[in-house]
View 1 (cartoon, rainbow, N blue to C red):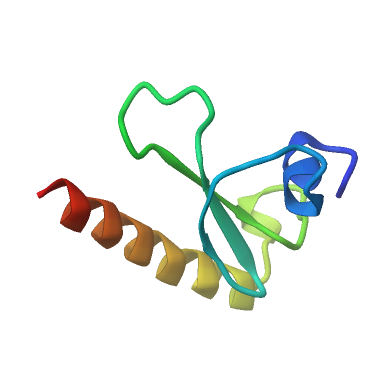
View 2 (view 1 turned 60 degrees about the vertical axis):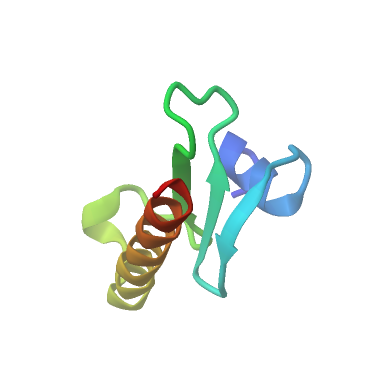
Length: 77
């Protein structure tokens, strides 16, 4: 995966500001934010598309999405 931009972010080749991480996903702030707190969430295991992402990873994507959304809502209100 390190040949993609996201792979390089995961390996630390490209710096990022981490918001959330577990064994399955990594969330970080978008470098060119239009909206304050705009966060990208990527799976650590590469797949060709969302339809071919394994169920365990999808579960962690959902949990992480909920956590990140609630976190930014809380700090902005």
